[in-house]
Length: 88
Image 1 (cartoon, rainbow, N blue to C red):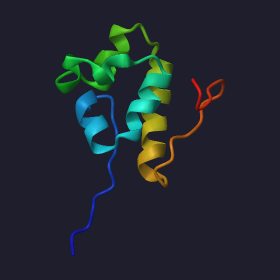
Image 2 (cartoon, helix red, strand yellow; image 1 turned 90 degrees about the vertical axis):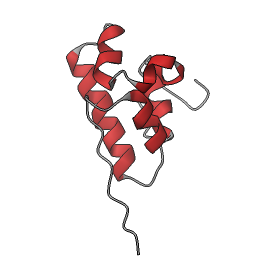
Image 3 (cartoon, rainbow, N blue to C red; image 1 turned 45 degrees about the vertical axis):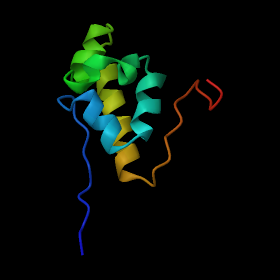
């Protein structure tokens, strides 16, 4: 029996790897304005590099990574952020 290891997101994880491992990560990244998920640089750019490239403050990068880890540790639902809705 193969046991699947719980995934942990980090600032150093490549954007493409994050989305490939957990497709729900794309929605969270997009909600933060990180549109790199569909960009060709996603395969080598880290979450932190993408965030910094878009001028995201350190606290927001931490929030993003925390939210991604909530997704990975939860039931697969994407957590709702304040001020966002499924129609966004």
